[in-house]
Each structure stands twice: as structure tokens, then as C-alpha cells.
Image 1 (tube, helix red, strand yellow):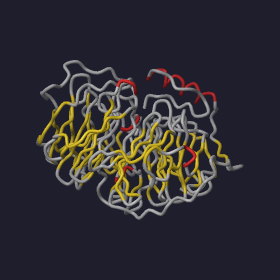
Image 2 (tube, helix red, strand yellow):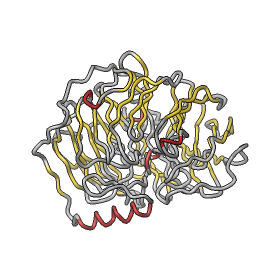
Image 3 (tube, helix red, strand yellow):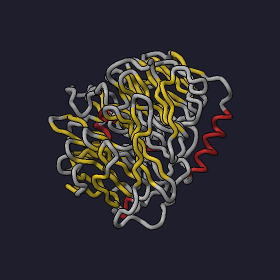
Length: 463
């Protein structure tokens, strides 16, 4: 969730999967999940078959060339789930062993002044985070070398900012959206709609109020940068109210460049930008629509109704397929080369077991991985949607899966990292303990992993 929902990404809607239906409060979520976890026992189990036949019949996806928008980079982790929002790290292999309590494998550990569920982002030699309470909002810059808190920027005094704090779920909080960074600036969004831009030294560049989001759990969709535009998804209220919108602001000034109205209710997923069908596409998820827009002007390209309920898991893209998944909907592979409203019969495949409510899927050309909040990891064949295996970790998850080399990194809510081979059979490579709870997705850079715990920011890796 992503931290919760889009912040890690982004979580307060319960994971029904094959277990239960969505609740209406954050406290209900925790109660339901804990009850379910106690029922399944103390020993995990993996299941490999028989495969489930997807519906409709799978069709081959069109080939898609890699683009700058989706290709991993080796050093920067500029947004929720890294380059392209895909959760895939390029460059050096990440460590597979560390222990937070003893300090083994931990290069540094630094306190985070205010709480938050935003995941770390990284550009160059600086790691950025946000933290907030009911009355205070802050942005942080940490040095990658030794974890020194280089600067703290207060976000306050913004014209039009709400005078009252929003109602938020305890699992979402006041700093759930993950920031976005580029070569010059870092952009931060808070639960009350305050949006602030700082340079890499923490000096304010611009700030504006987007207005109090009407969101049942608190706003959590994260930010992204495309070219010189900052993209903000503000899904709120009910679909019939017409208050949801997608916005693109100038990175330099904060001025609105375009807006697109959305007939969807509040959601928590974070968009991605892909290149497919000879055009760049901004992919969004909400109930019931997956909608693609032109990132240049907000024009709608296509939409398809495949989701349902509270939508928090973000889309991904691999092998020429847009992959989405959420409980009360389905997991589905979409051909992104069409136009207009697409019929569900046009899906490349769909799958309806053990669906996530908070954790976003992870996909490669060969595999799709789905992780539920109650700990069931399912591996599907990316071309057909056939289930290859699943495994129950018997612990809770809010963080979305990440991939480095051929290893999946799955961070449990208790801070335990499970490292699994990304293959056609289940193979656990090891575990590593953070030593404190975490709901946030990790950042990867140069063979290191940056992890936000409940109290501290950690850097793990070799010296």
C-alpha cells in the first residue's frame, strides 16, 4: 500500500477474495482480516494445480515495444512502485537477507518525524517521504549515503486549504499518497487535498489546495510525472455526483493544464502511463471502469467495465497487456489497442479466484502475480490467465509485490519480507525481518532496498 491503496499504494477496504465481502470501515477491515488469519492455522501451504481455465478464451496480445515510460531504470525510483509504476527494479540484484532488530544487513536506519503510509521515492542521492497528523503536514529529504535527514519542509498556509481535517481511516491516515519526483522537484499530496512542490533541497516551489477530497477512507491515490505534467487522480464521492476528475498540472508552476471529468465513485488506485497501439496512454482504474486517456490532453481513448466495489489495486502493463485485478471484480488482461467502449468479450482472459483488494498486481511477459491482504499469492500464466500455483503465507499484507532480477519481494504488515522465485512453481528463497510493522512498498536502487516502517526509514544492502 502500497501502504494503503494507491499509496501502497495504496488500504482500508477488506480483502474479500474468496473469503468475505467488502466492509464499510477501516476498523471493520482489520477485524475481518485478523479473524480470517486466525482461522487458517499456523502453517502455510502451497498449491500447484489443477490449473483453472480462464474465461473468456485467451487470445494473444499484440507485441509492445519497451518505452521510456515503462522501462526500469537503475538508480531512480521516482513514484509509487518505481519506474512506470510497475514494481520492477532494474540494475543490480537486491539483498535477500537482513535483520532490522540486530542491524545485520542494515546500512542505516533513520527516524521519520510524523506518521504516514506513503512509500519512499528516490532521485539521485535523496530519498523523499511525507508524514502528517490531523494538524501538521511535512515533506522529508534523506541522504542515501547514511540516512541523514537533510531537510524538513512544512506544508502550511496554502490559500484555500480546508480549515478542518478530513475524516480518514486509521489504516490510510493523513499522508497516504506516495510522492512523485523528477530531476528538479518532488511533489507531495496530503489527505486534505494540499499539494506542494519542493526542489531537492527542500525549498518551496509552489503549492495549491485541490479542495477536501470526498473519500470514505481518506485520499490515497499517488502522483506521477509524465513529461512536464504532474498527473493527479481525484476520484471522490459517488459516480452520480460527477465530482471525480483526472488532472494534469504544470510541474513548473502548478497550473492546471487539463482536466477530465470521470463518472466513477471514490477510488484509491494510481494510474500508469504506457505506450501501446502507436500512442501513449494514461491507464486508470475505478468501479467499474478501466479507462485510458491521452496524457497530453486528457482525451478518452477507450474504456472497459471489469472492476467492482472499492478499487484500490493499481494497473500494470507487460507483454502488450494491461493487467488489472480487484475483489468484487476480476483479474483481467486487456488489449490496449482498441478505441471507444470495449465489450467484456474483448478481454484477452479473466480470472476470479483470490483477488486483491489493496495490493496491486505484478506482471512480467510470462507471469502475473496476485497478492491478497490475507496472504494468498497466486501465480498466473500471463498469456492465458491459467493458474500455475498459489501459496498462503498466513500473514497480512498491505504492501504491493516488487520484482528484482527473478525474485519477488513481498513485505508483510508485520515487517517480515518474504523472498520468492518468480517462476512457474512456488519456491521461497528466504525471509528477512524489518523489526517493525510496515504498510508501504519498498524502493530499489543500486542493489539497495529502502523500506519505510511504522517509525523509521531503513536502507538494507551490502556496504
